[in-house]
Image: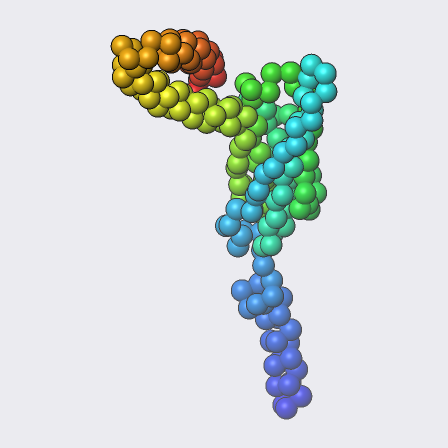
Length: 183
């Protein structure tokens, strides 16, 4: 009887070891609901009339592991890189970089996805917006100087007027670029 009881207890523990809910070490793919960690960087290398652009994606997932990273250019799939990572790269030659948007999607083995993008228009738009604002400040400053000196210092007033004309020309170029880039 004791042998049968000991045998039953041993069989019970062996059986429980194979049931996932009792096995604290087992993690199934469905338990992972957290998207992978994803960070992006890029290198731009000028070459004659084209640019070589290398997108570097650093993607990690410590629960189910990484499955793949997808690279999109202007919403069109360009490349799928599989493997455990953590570094995934994609490179392309492109003439009109300023019209490009790159999106990267990192998938873990459980199917969770992290999405990030690089808008190559953004830095230029920020610069153009800063130039426009600075121009407006300078124009107000030179207009005030012109009004103060028009009767007392005609030569100085002419210099201020010429500076304003040059800034006006540059301002028009800034506005045109902003419209073309959609800033």
